[in-house]
Length: 263
Image (cartoon, rainbow, N blue to C red; front, side):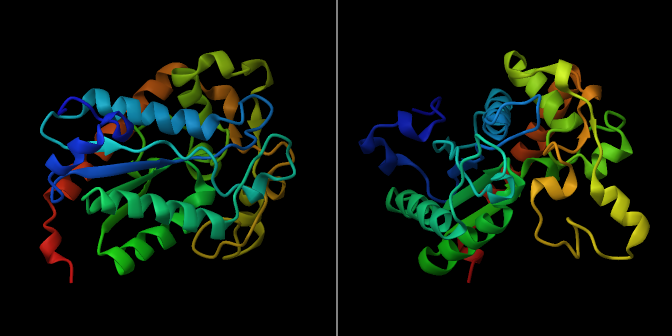
């Protein structure tokens, strides 16, 4: 059983043997939404699952984790103008994902990490984590893959700041994980109106400390931002390994944290 890392592979009778203080349930949350003219609508899901696979390949044997089924539909209403996008409302997502957390709790576990690969889910998972803490006393950590930083020198300053959707970073990851689904003949530099706003406004931005509610076409009519033409699979591999190592360090922290320290 120790070698199995996926929740759904365990038999019901095996959950009782798990240590609730050190076993961490991972819930990957993603999206099904447009990613410009060159990437498929499963991009966030493919990246999230590819990064989990990278993590598991590098995970030390002593870390007890169980990966829950990937949530492939998230909150993607900022992309609704583009065909192929499927979304839940925020209210529905909170209810659905809280119910998953309740199932984890019923199985005897008290620790979860929400591994998010879609920016539109960020507010939702924050509500989820607090709800499970208040109602069930669980320790629920939320993280976004890019929060572990990126290898130095791989990406331009423009993509590091503005390439938030289908740019160099996501396209490189897709060339590493699912090159069969990438059409590089349609990859190009997708400018961001956010960069233009920096020149005209002191604080107002679509994203950041003073962000406003935006839809994808507010940033670029193609629904993508960043220099996708600069992407390559080697960048994707290095990025995936960097993210995986950061995520493993987070799992180590979570596994070590004594639940008794919560109020």
